[in-house]
Image 1 (tube, rainbow, N blue to C red):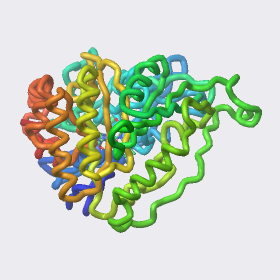
Image 2: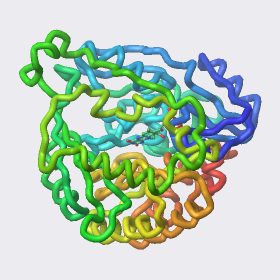
Image 3: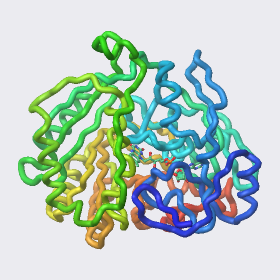
Image 4: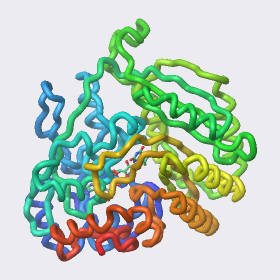
Length: 447
Ligand SMILES: Cc1cc2nc3c(=O)[nH]c(=O)nc-3n(C[C@H](O)[C@H](O)[C@H](O)COP(=O)(O)OP(=O)(O)OC[C@H]3O[C@@H](n4cnc5c(N)ncnc54)[C@H](O)[C@@H]3O)c2cc1C
């Protein structure tokens, strides 16, 4: 079958097998020399694609155990964050870290070591993982954690499925008293103002900004910051306090078909940006919002990836070290504005310091991360090659979970401090390089 991930680029013809048990996935493993695991395909590019065999975890999705005295949940890797939230929010528990969509599996969250709007406080998802059961290339199931097989654990967290198939994960949920967020939005006029706003928001549990990447001159980098805290019962009005732990899953609609290419042009993006920026009041505004609106606004538009048309789109997410971020981001935003290729979605976030003891190939580093979308077309590739050079010159790197096009040398330079260690551990647990993705082949991650 033809398979692609969220960016609908690239597409590959492959065999997709869904496993339901440990025995079944072992059987699939024996039937082919090369595989990659796949969750809900929410990585944008090719990290869960393999031209021979893709092993899907989505039918392997049971809860195994939950201890309310510690918040530790044990589950099979194919369960989605959406199901966990549906079951646990009404009982007063939330995810320790969540990406901008809940349509990802726990296995995918571990393999990309995902970050959320609280990275500066809570780090990445794997900081909260107690242990992982991993099916390795010889068919054995190996338990790994920060203390048991620690090298394998650190290579698997953020390792993009290249160490084996994650079967079960134990991780810690956090207690909440309502399903609402006390949100403040802050309108800022340029890059300097939004960066100051991030610095001043370091005490907030969650912070993220939408950035208008088509502005030039004085308005370069104008943004809307959204920051939030979990609301307590005292923050809710009478109606919300009747069911404080029930998050309204608002009306959602689906983009029915791949849209024609002329739908998203510089002009439509400019018009959207002007409307979005203009709709927010000047200064700071306060609101109580439900957690779906705060964490997952895009999930309300099902299959929104179709707005980019059937050729798909490229997501570009880079991180720049804090000291170089103002200069680096200014250069990047100027190049994008000059190219006229505005990104419909553009998100800026300040990462906190990353654990030395975290995932070896995990993406975050202390600094600013910018995420952008561009429709697949020739000049998008040349613009992104230019941006790669800027990111590397300023000491940054790109996120593997979003990538479909970086070159091996961009990868090597961005992950120079960690890639040799990763290769050594992978070679010892997967000597025949059986866990392979189109991305790992393109970037020669497995050596
Ligand atoms: C709208 C949107 C917003 C997003 N926001 C964020 C964000 O804020 N922060 C962030 O960090 N990411 C974000 N992402 C990216 C997403 O969280 C990651 O790509 C995540 O890994 C996707 O999980 P998945 O279950 O869909 O896995 P897939 O996309 O299917 O696979 C992703 C990787 O995980 C591996 N994998 C999946 N399951 C297993 C398994 N059982 N065993 C071993 N390896 C496995 C795959 O091999 C692949 O390398 C976003 C994506 C979208 C579409």
